[in-house]
Length: 74
Image 1 (cartoon, helix red, strand yellow):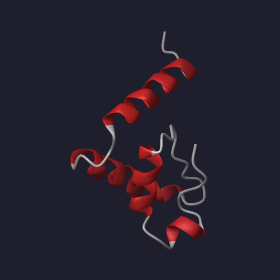
Image 2: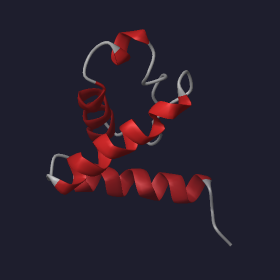
Image 3: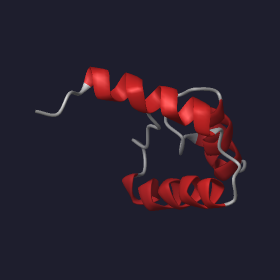
Image 4: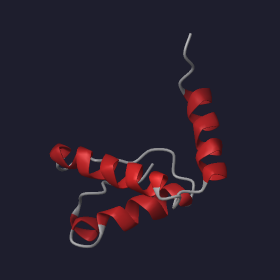
């Protein structure tokens, strides 16, 4: 899990870059805690990166498997 993506260190820089870098590094969860209204901005960044092929599909698949194991659906 990342630290809060909308805290000062990321928020004043390019949040979309931080999202892509975190997901491609194998982070399973993106935290948006300080400013919940920014959730949609983060989600849009991730969706755009996915549509543009900037996210590593293998790493995302590994993350999906970890999350399914941590939060099984019955």
